[in-house]
Picture 1: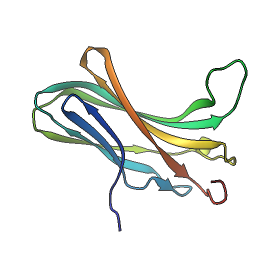
Picture 2: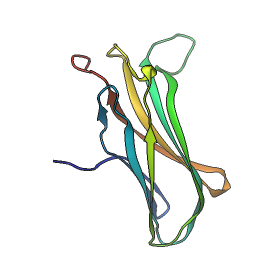
Picture 3: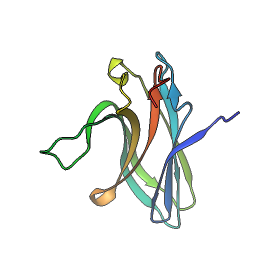
Picture 4: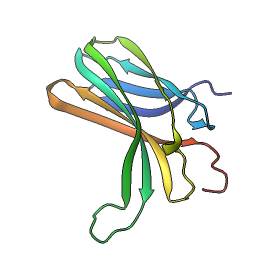
Length: 141
């Protein structure tokens, strides 16, 4: 049995940020819980905050758009950091995002992703994302 599943992993310089969720496949009524792990690299790195966004992606072709997906943010959380990750240090921050009816969908052209965005000092942002599921999804994939 797996207790932790890495969902996103971001490297910036020698620092690494991993977002781990307890359950990437949630049933209706369950909450998205997890932990963000900051692993310090060779030098201290200032972090302003971390943004977690649950995004509903709907595949849709439109002639007036260069993009094949429409993104809608259906959940988010901002985690203040206010400090630095010191060299070789590990720091954890827990999070919880409560789903609502916007997380549900009934099309195989729709999916949910969790996007982790790390806002680093001096206006630099790094991000990664991975898919999550919510509710009954049988037959859609």
